[in-house]
Length: 440
Image (cartoon, rainbow, N blue to C red; front, side, top):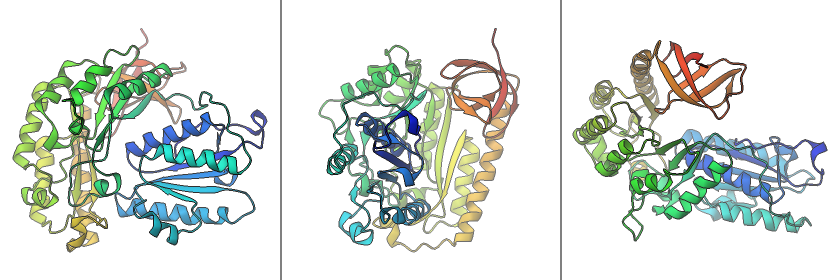
């Protein structure tokens, strides 16, 4: 759930409309949810973390894997009783769960409206009209009550023109639609003005930005357009598709000081036959060459990846090829998922012939291999100094990220939120580091 500032009863009239926003899924969903919250607050809605207090319930959903879809169905079931009590309340569902809205409406008649992914304007229009139906006048435009984030996301494109055989994104989010650079810059300027210092440029396939625009623009042009914004300290980007990563983009990351050399480069498999059946558009050899060029241009950078295990037809030998690639490349982080068929995708029509227990075994082995690699990579930072942007507290310790997205904790009585900190590393693990702030 995306957290916005919750207003205590004594701060506002109890008759104000309240909204409850539940969100799961990718960073694009997180960006959409945050902007929905801001827009609702501009229109007089107040945030609540208790759905029983809400007049408007908004679920922003994900179905990229069966486990995510199961969470959505469970949340819908849990909220159904709230639609049947005495309080006037609306329930809206948006996101990748929404395929055929008519079918969903018959299956979930207690839901008032269904909207596709990133349909923020449609959700806000519904909220405005519903408020009027309840006799609530539209509130005057005002600054949202949500506190600014130190790090935030800015979508630069929606949808994807790739058609990977396992992926439901194109079916639910449609073909790629790149935003104009002027619009992107305006969003970044607004966030920086409110205190954001770290911006992540988002796209389902961020490397392909601009390929659908009449002008010959690409991701490097977006870097150039926002790099001179004062008080913007860091620029990140994700997620990258290996088949669309160009040398122009690689060189731009190396050239612009604010752009962090942290690469989210999803390989998915280390076997050429599996990559072909996934329709990924590259070979293992091409991926290795791409990694080589990236590391030559940004030797201090980090490369993270995604891997799917148990894809239909994946033999044990093909799985071992993936482990071999992970050991050879030595990624900083590997996000591992066991394959689950998504209705409507080509792979869903194939025999899901890797048993669940074997998928889990492969997932666990992959994570164990990566845990050792990540531990060794991070151990090199022991007794070294790192610079982090502090974005919050966790268990009473300040928390921040390096330019390569390494998570670092330290203790201090000072208020470090939104500041750069130099930290002397005293402990390292696979997933984080701990140290002492250097104040002099």
